[in-house]
Image (cartoon, rainbow, N blue to C red; front, side, top):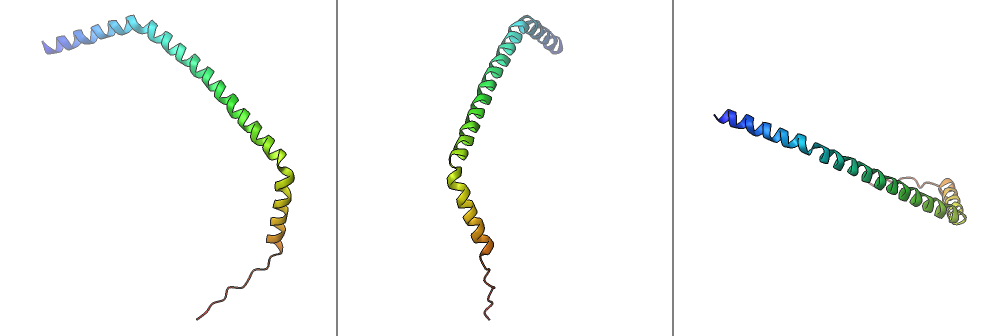
Length: 87
């Protein structure tokens, strides 16, 4: 008798799931559209941040390029001190 009730319960749940499947399908489609819209907004925000960062790099180039050149020259011509081992 228990097995029959389990089968009857599963059959009832299956009928309910089949009846509700159009609503679930519509909800899934709406969710996918919302995800696509939010994803495109997110990608455009990332592109805007990259553009701002690139503009800052270009605008500050007169400052950081000479600083890098000086640092490179200092490291190039600096003499290394020998390691002194004391006993």
